[in-house]
Image (cartoon, rainbow, N blue to C red; front, side, top):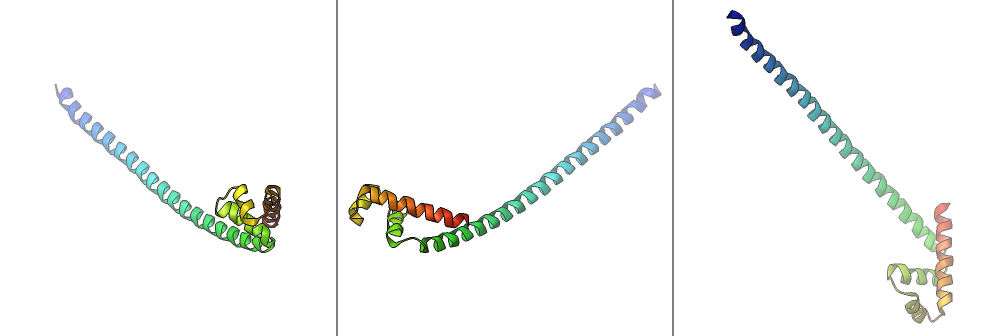
Length: 118
């Protein structure tokens, strides 16, 4: 009979240890998740700063690239990509033929690409 009385405390102690071990494991997991989210947040901030610097550099290079274009190329590219106009409308505004507008835009974009690659 005394053996039966000793089992209950043993089971309670065992259960207590099991609960404490599980709680410790969960705490480690939560701590790791918090650290991972903090590192992730830091890297996303750094990524945002890098992307912002890259965009600024690209914008500056594009401004410099626009300076090498002829005034007609700038005008055609501006009308097409900034104002979203169709080629036919650009023809009417610039008073030139359809193919001339296409050529101006194409040659202007090629100059810009060459400038941005260098």
